[in-house]
Length: 148
Image (tube, rainbow, N blue to C red; front, side):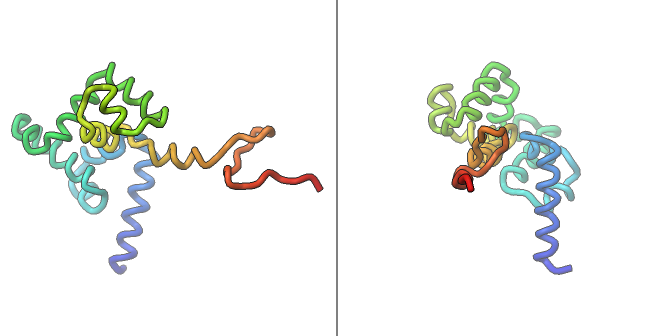
C-alpha cells in the first residue's frame, strides 16, 4: 500500500473516532497507546498526548512544557467557565470575543476548543442548512422548488 493510501486510511480512522467520541475526541485519543495517536492527527493531538504522558511522571514539568494544554485542561475542569464557554461557542461567538468576555487568553480558548469542544466544523456544516415548512432540511443556497 502506498503512502497516500495509508494517509487516507488514517484520515478515515480519525474521522470515525471523532464521530464516535464527540467534541473531546482529541483528548480521548491522546490517552490511547502512542501508535494510535502518532500515526495521524494534528499538532493539538500530538501535544495533548505529550502533555498527558509527561504529566503522569512530572505534572509541574508537563505544565511548563505544554502551558497552553495545561491552561485548557484547567479551564475544562472549571465547570462554571466550561458551561459559559460552550454557550458562547454554540452561539457562534468568535474566540477573541470569548476570551475578552471571560478574561482569559485567546490561545487558551483555541486549545480548549481543539481538545475539549471541537464543534465549530459541525456548526459550520449545519449553518448551511435551513428548515423548510415541511420540516426537511435543505442547503440555503438551493432555490425553493417552484410549483409546476
